[in-house]
Structures are given as structure tokens and as C-alpha cells.
Image (cartoon, rainbow, N blue to C red; front, side):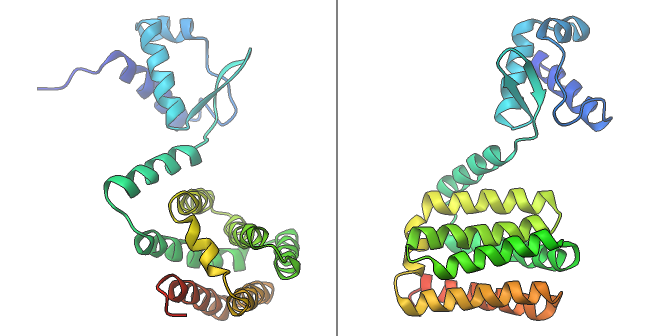
Length: 229
């Protein structure tokens, strides 16, 4: 027996279909609630319920005085979902890091191919700032900026959003681990050298040695986290 759709599901499916058919695109406003209600033959309360769900999912946002629009703001939704997985499924650092390494290695390969001059300049600025900074929190910030810039240079929006969400989850649950990485001058020096090599090989468009440098960096972090360095 086919399950009867709830009224709010009809609204969600209608909006999803319009997105798939490119009748609705990023930044485009949705019709007023009354219009959606009349078109689909559902109550305005059902329309509001559907819009609330789509807002939580990051599909829809609202502007005061301008109504609802397609936002594609999925990062917050992914952070919340991953956070719940971390707590309920007892995910640990190793599991998160395994996903991160796989995505960053692919992001690097794509960045070697797709990075523009402005991307390289941005990365070099971050590496220099990391080198000159004497504040550990600031160093952590530039470390994250370097990895984010590589992901962005890949040109793959999905990789960027997932890595950004993973980084936020790591900040929420394992923030002290980030501080532990920078606890000694030896570690700071190793971190700096690793990032220099990663960016230098990207500049040379050398994906093989660049990925080796990136993997060496991750292995160093892993050894620190597991108290082997």
C-alpha cells in the first residue's frame, strides 16, 4: 500500500522538483506562502512547516521584508549532523581524520590542476603569516586558512563544504588537540616546513610530491595526537 504524503512533504517535493528543473536557482526568491498554499492545495501552516524543515537543511533562508529564498547554506546543516554523529555514534578523531585525509588529497590534486595565480598568492601569504606569527591561536587560524584555501582552489564546492564542516566539528570536540600540535618549538617548526613544501609543490604543479608532503604533514599530526612525537 502506497504511503500517503503529508501536506508539508508535498511542499518540500515541489520545491525540490523546481530546483532539479532549474526553475529555482541560488538566490532566487520563493513565491509568497499564500501562493504556494493555493497552488499545491495545502494549508499555509503546512507551507510554513515545510519551509522550516528546508531552512534547517540549509536549502532555504529568509530576509526580513524580502521573504524566503534559495540559499544553499548547507555548512551549518552538515556541522549539526556530523556533531550528532560524533556524539551518538561515538565517532573519534581517527575516523574524522581518515575522511579528511582522503578529501584533502583529492582537493590537492584538483588544486594543482585548477589553482589560479590569485590562489597561489593567497596561499603564500598565509604561509608567510604562519611563519611570522608568535601566537599559537593565530598559527592555528593560518593553518586552517591554508587547508581551506587549497580546498577552495580545487574548484569542487562539495569538497570545500565537507572539509569546512569537518574542521568546525574538530574545533567543537577536539579543540585541545589543535593546541597540543603547537605545544613545542620543534612541532611549530615541523608544521611550518610542511606547509611551505605543500604550497611550493602546488606552485610547481607537482601533484606527486605535493601529496607526499601533505601526507607527511598528516602523519606528523597523527603522531602528535597519539603522543608519538
